[in-house]
Figure 1 (cartoon, helix red, strand yellow):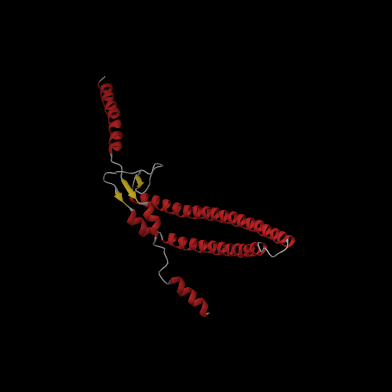
Figure 2 (cartoon, rainbow, N blue to C red; figure 1 turned 90 degrees about the horizontal axis):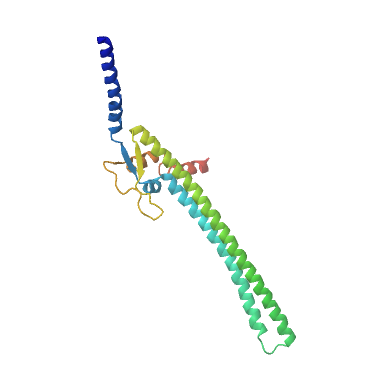
Length: 210
């Protein structure tokens, strides 16, 4: 009987100890970190390369648009000259009517060219915006994965983006007690494989010499 009572006592003690130990684990404070993803993206060396690439696309679109605009301006000048010529009172009625018909034809051509230019420009802008969204999305994905790696390495339970805002433009993370800011660490890690300044130009020079 005594052995049975002892067994009951030990079993009760074990059952009580289990939830206590589990509770102790739950009471351990979460390790929280923060990162400014907007700053991290702006300091990422690949971002600078991408921005330069997009500047090239933008210049190309602007140059092509100027070429199209100049062609329209030239046609508009021809239409004005025909208009002035048609308004010459010394011309016969038949000649004036012929010139006015040419003016109207030029005007229709002008409208068609302008419509084509606007459609082309809208299509180019849309394609440019989509490419920008996709390419910057890839960089954000790379940096998000980097945040996960650093978080795992340093044992963080949560890493919040301090630059994130809600749909109403309110900052998502207003306060995080005892949080560690990992932005500087992540910037350094993200750029550890960045090429040295002048590295590309030196390679290019060596290729030319060969």
